[in-house]
Length: 222
Ligand SMILES: O=C(O)COP(=O)(O)O
Ligand SMILES: [Mg+2]
Image (cartoon, rainbow, N blue to C red; front, side, top):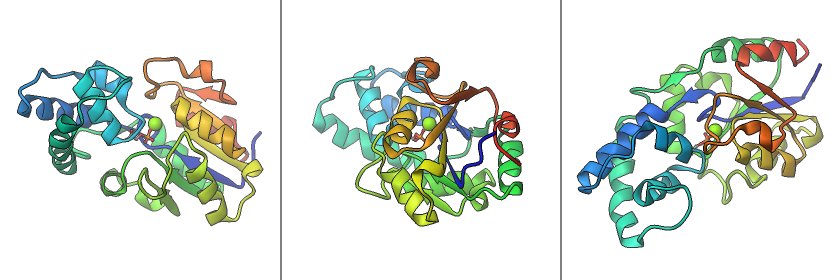
């Protein structure tokens, strides 16, 4: 049984299935630019590195590369305005999240949230889904100079809670979470259902992969 002194949890693909709202905003943005929609299957593979990177990927129609900067300058404000209005309209907590959070808080684990989503979207999303109060700390993608896969947000949270990273656990869904956790010296558990750019997260070799946060009670000391 694991008994970390602090647990940090990722948002998109871990707590929240945010792809329906992100897809809506990508596709309306594309329509306004006079370009074809990208659809949910593509957007699912592009989430995880912040909204600006998502917009760049949508403009390109693929994961890697850089679109024309003039096009980004037009597209990004459109997307940001749309997402501000649609951050939680279609997004849902994954099955098992409420149960997993209740187990962790009930067992006394200090909880933080670490996401690459910008703070202006993270805060209302967590609030609208009724889970903001579960977290003593929320570190968003623009809270610090660097975001995941850099270890900075995780180390910042460890310092906030006064916990040695060797006694800290990250729960995420993507290779960025695994890389950040490994660089920070945290343990890492991943959700099998999340967004990992179309790759099976098992290839990144987290400490464990689970299908639902309700399974945490079998891994963490109560
Ligand atoms: O890509 C994003 O905006 C955020 O993704 P994350 O919550 O999985 O870090
Ligand atoms: Mg994620």
